[in-house]
Image (tube, rainbow, N blue to C red):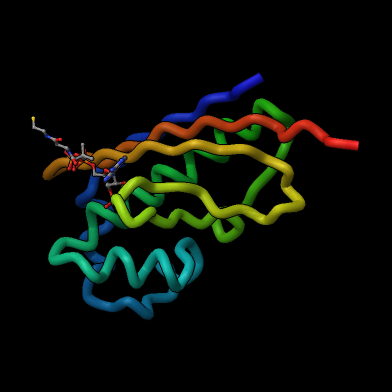
Length: 120
Ligand SMILES: CC(C)(COP(=O)(O)OP(=O)(O)OC[C@H]1O[C@@H](n2cnc3c(N)ncnc32)[C@H](O)[C@@H]1OP(=O)(O)O)[C@@H](O)C(=O)NCCC(=O)NCCS
């Protein structure tokens, strides 16, 4: 069965971090690939906020499966067409789906997750 998680954040919250890709707070939350993606844009804050939402949304979704994930265990990358997807350790045994959106002030994410069926 699929579980769903959703999150919304003020982009303003992330604006103080956009001057230093090596900021300690950013490195605690985001992977190097995520930071490189976000900082490749003129306005990194909206992409940082969206990824933060994606992590929170997945944490909410898996909590309903009695699982715990740290933010640093959740990576968000993008396909060549721009669509975002989660990268998780294979051992977590999860199928996931992700959608992000952001405008000038808010970012949001919707996460879907299901436990992968074991094939014997
Ligand atoms: C995919 C698309 C719908 C995204 O629309 P948008 O308004 O730019 O999206 P938002 O600003 O709400 O959200 C941006 C997020 O969308 C996601 N996204 C980008 N391309 C995507 C795609 N192809 N599929 C799914 N999600 C996508 C990304 O996660 C992006 O955030 P990120 O760069 O931080 O990862 C748009 O870029 C697009 O290609 N539209 C097609 C338009 C079209 O076909 N028009 C036909 C004539 S009407």
